[in-house]
Length: 183
Image (tube, rainbow, N blue to C red; front, side, top):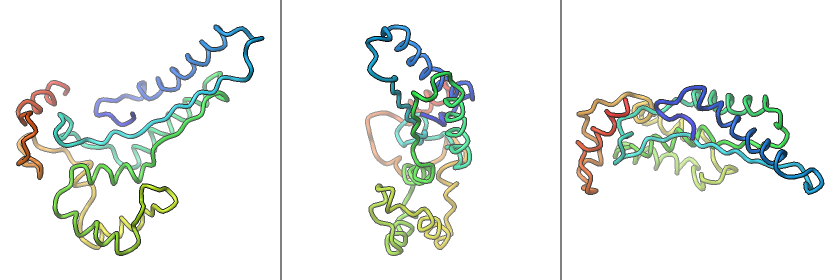
């Protein structure tokens, strides 16, 4: 997971270092004559999306550029490892992650955006070969909605959320205490 609210660059680099430790353990533990091939390690990251009904519902999400920078730092850190050829790195699509952040904490104003994007060809967007971020950008622009309102802006602890009327058995005050404890 990349992009957690209190994440430091050292946390991101630690992903590559952990991969290196796994490779090193393989080569130090398994005798050379028992190895049929080089160890194969796959590191995959997704980006943190703040969700409703969690202490992070008040947290801002990283920007598209921040997500790309974090993926780049992870990739270059892996490339700097001794066993880099044994490590494959995958990351979740940054454009999709931004949209997920919008829809995770969205409200009724997004209904028209979704409908307009659909009319313009947004269908089967979970399949990368069908996803077209430009269609979504146009739909947001045509409806005068800034995606950053739902993703990167800092929320006040007293903000009323679209989902506040739903009782999930955990109070908003409890979530606030957990969120404030983390800061």
